[in-house]
Image (cartoon, rainbow, N blue to C red; front, top):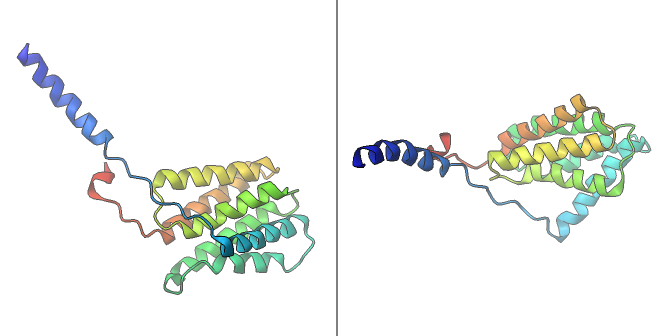
Length: 168
């Protein structure tokens, strides 16, 4: 009986140890009162872009997103600019209801501000962003491009260092 237990433990124990080594979720920032106003600006910018009612909306929208990039993170500005450009192209000509625009604005803000998100959290954010865009009629390839850029912004701005046990 003992000879059968040892090989079983040699197989089961490493599997259990590796299963417990997944990357822990990082903290997700919550917008404060001042940020809520900024999120409304981003939301309105998205809606102006969608309706085409304000020709300066794309530039204002890009500036609203860029202001969350810290001075020492200038290397991330091109990724944020690309995110605003892809988002602008995706929502242009769609009907963007208030609630959807609000959620999309929040997702874009999170992509920039959540510095310690895990890979799983980033993937969830990307999927949610893609679903939101597709729910208002954005074609899947275009929605995927925006979601992919959310991931690029996350990779550029993350301050989270993976631990050795998270590589397995």
